[in-house]
Image 1 (cartoon, rainbow, N blue to C red):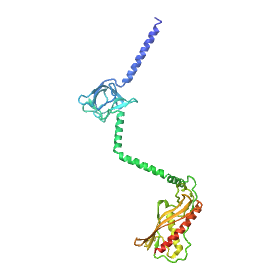
Image 2 (cartoon, rainbow, N blue to C red; image 1 turned 180 degrees about the vertical axis):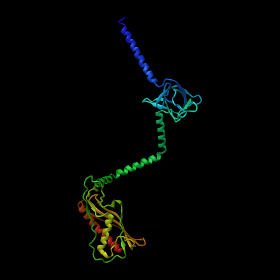
Image 3 (cartoon, helix red, strand yellow; image 1 turned 180 degrees about the horizontal axis):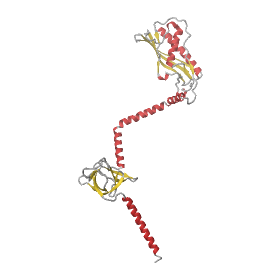
Image 4 (tube, rainbow, N blue to C red; image 1 turned 90 degrees about the vertical axis):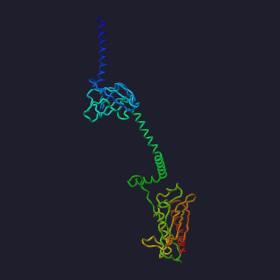
Length: 368
């Protein structure tokens, strides 16, 4: 007896420990839910995925009861009736909101009650109606949301396609103007004191025609030369080169003014070198000229396909005071550039322009 007694004690102790653990788990599971209960009927208009008998009932997040029974409504194929039992004293009122919540990573469904504003009801509440869509799971809600997004995309397919096309055009424009954007960024860097030090510019002027013989015929009336027109490419002080690979050959060189204004100034100066008393002028405010020399700059660039050449081409029209064109002609002159550097290039342009300006002066005089 003395030998078997310790085994009996140990066995009794193990059984008592197991009973205590199960009792503690049961107490923990049902704590707060003991005492009188009140039954309620809940009506769900739609499916209740995963809800089962024994599922928890929460009121403002606190467990107050369980689901006792689930039935399909005989009078409506969409409705589900759930019978719940909650602790008496739970403030369930007529404005209590009913929904289905999904807790934890596995999405365990529970019935969620949310208190309203009523402090008491005139009549006892036995039936609660769940909010529309309360039974939708998170997956179903995401599926519905994606369905609405798909509908919006379908309704706006044409504007979205147009927007994407515009973005493509914009990106292609950025790609074509990468060099200009780099120049803008470099300019901002220099303006803010950053970046490399700017290259010192050397300004070159254009030589007007000046070796005229004594005038044999003078110009009659008031003649003006408005600022010439040209392509945007020529509205610059930079040396314009036809080959893109050579476009940065003269980073330190520039003309004294933009090419159209430079041509206007030097043509007037050429006329003055022939006959300063009757030479054309720039347009005068409030004065109606007798004639105007309308100039369109067709070329004023370096052609470097084979041997580099300074090429100048001007289209000139004579317009009278009645707006009638009385004469027109295309003037062209070119001069070979011996070495493709700034001084030699400017020298070639000087010769080409002087020859062209003499032709313009002679033609203008003969046109009156």
